[in-house]
Length: 138
View 1 (tube, rainbow, N blue to C red):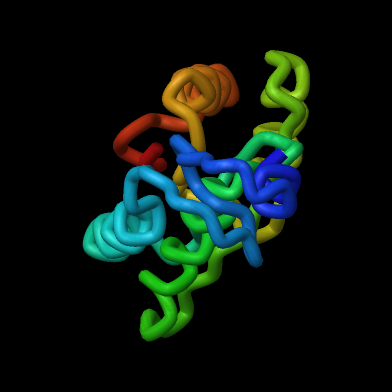
View 2: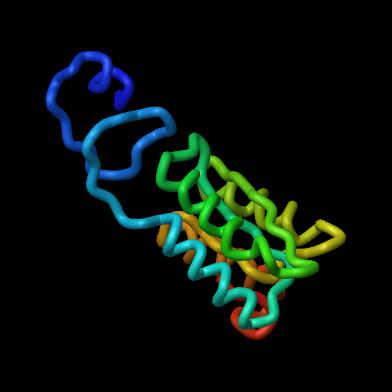
């Protein structure tokens, strides 16, 4: 849709993040700075295995969030970030958490795009016996 407005030369103001290559006026939160700050918080808590959780299809804001999160740990030794995706359904979130907890290097820091999904992720971690916030941060 953003590309259509750009190509049509119609006047538009985007409420939200722009996709790469789009040159339109927009108003949005600074997702990159917010998630760079979140990375620092996770590092200060001692987390070394981090995961960014997002829903597919991915929004432009989620892409900016991931970039900021990665930037926030770029100088942190022995710290890794992975990305986990889900389809937005409760079953999809359960499958994703189950897969994350089966990894050899289980994440302990979970940055979740979308507040309602953060609640589902927290509930699912607790259901699997993970003590939040003692063993994991969401």
